[in-house]
Image (tube, rainbow, N blue to C red; front, side):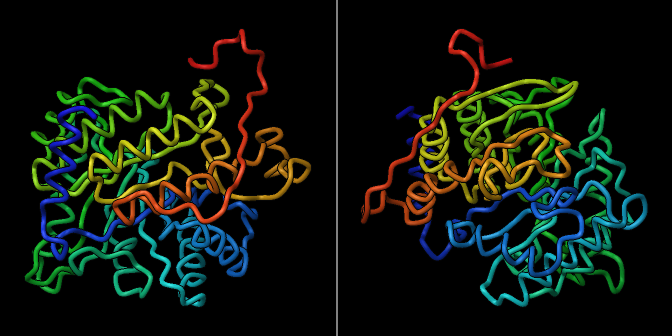
Length: 352
């Protein structure tokens, strides 16, 4: 194991057990494209929550690229998902992952926080709701700074959400490094984000478009920097990637070997939490949500073509999910066989 991994892991293990956050596993949920369609009912969302929970997933991070102004269906669906979790009564955790690539306003951000601040299924850390993002730093990092100032103002204002306790949320965004943009941050990129946003509570690495070596190395760089600074770090694990349209790129994981490598890296790095990227992003094929046999996978009227079921990745992850949570490899109680295959000829490069 690399020395930095050993040091990061040792630091995490050295902290008193009572002071360590509970190790939790989330899945990135695209609210725009629910597994059972745009008209999904509370019962449909309960089916998804139950499927996730039965495989060791503790919650969803709800990606919302709109809210109440431009695309109000985001808010309506989020309300249903939170209600579904509440009615189930199984303790499934939910948090908003605000997608600032799509023009969300400060007013919408505040409503996201206020709407679910007291919800029994809202994921909290230190008594405060956790808010994540996809991007939001802005071309010159100014949007990210303004957003942090806005969140702080919610607690500072009289009658604000945070009262006299400061920022009313635990803010754990995914910010791209700027000006040197990369999907696979190295130590210098982590240092830049830490330098430009020193008051962040933590960081989430949204890693999907990359091979397993790239994602594992980026997770490690982020864990070393953010945990080393006394911050929270939410690592990514992703099984596969295939973008469509102008984003056509493919990255495979060598069957399941690459997924295991990502998990074992996150475990060694002592990641605070792990987020599977994604539950249901059909457009980038990083999904793990179960949705039936191949004959039933023409989701959204075949908009993305035939979608193959990736639930084998999810089921095979259970061993590493349990390992991550317990801090030690679990005993194997029963044998299960998983097999992976690629549809393209072996001679065709499968990375781009």
